[in-house]
Image (tube, rainbow, N blue to C red):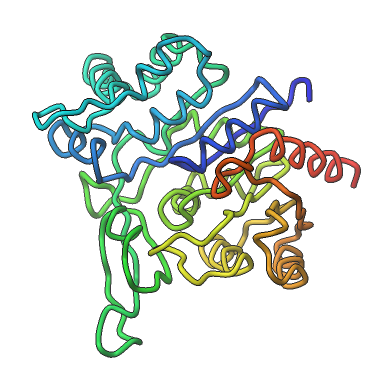
Length: 317
């Protein structure tokens, strides 16, 4: 689709899948990435240096990178048992760029040039965020609501997540402030994608940043939600596909959607999903979009083809 300006919002492996699919239909791609990770290499760098967690940003960069050796180097993790054990090379490079340049947008642009990136990678916010969640099922009384904090804690909770909030990790009382370039990208886009990915920790956080929320509600772009192939242990264990849409609506009641894409084999009751999609103003597109070799991952070519058909149908309306 020549000239299609696409923006994908998310994080982690889910955003990588979306970016791979978008590369099959357009070259004008902007990834807007969550910045609340507090685990693994990203969490260590964030705590030690006070920087944005680089891991999800690194994944987005490599998803849009050219096929040269730097892509492999960026994803390489150090072994051993020393201070570097577990760190990805790309995380350290991004940490260095963030410290030297002092501007996350400039740092990501420089990393993009190094990797030969097609498109652009932007942080959701230019400061690290923390996720808080209201969770039940952690006490003897299953209705007791507990508040837990941190992306890893939310992603791995054995309880049921009901609602999340975002707070500035450096100034607890402040609302999250969006990266201005990300807001502009959403407002100017022809296509905006939400999902797949960890629903409460990678997808929904974008809707809780006031400027990004308003841009997503007000943009004239075609808005598409891509659902996960399987519920995620912890965050969305036991969730049906339509429940993912219900919590999306609960966190952003004003958001209208044009299309909901799901794998046909992952939807046990298609009529329920169609009704839930219709409540958001969307049509549900049920196709085979899984990767045959790794069924828990989306196939970029198949997902790209489904997105192209959905976009054409929305435009025809």
